[in-house]
Length: 88
Picture 1: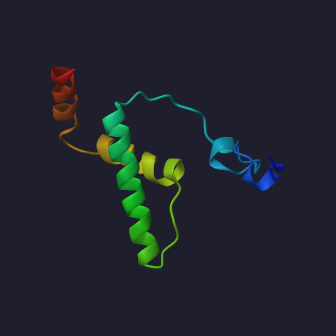
Picture 2: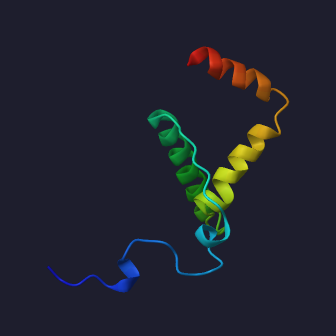
């Protein structure tokens, strides 16, 4: 097998201004189905942005925080929480 170049080695972004370097980790436990739904929505949003000649967005820095912010800002958040409590 050939040697792996540094640019293709997975791992944290060495840039000190990267999202991984500037934000703290916050564990969140989601069902596999919900993770898949989030991933698909993120991919669709980025695909649409590419088709519209707009820059891609970062998953954690832009998309996931926006999803959580949108949920917190909803007037019916309490209803969603109660529905999840009843569901699980």
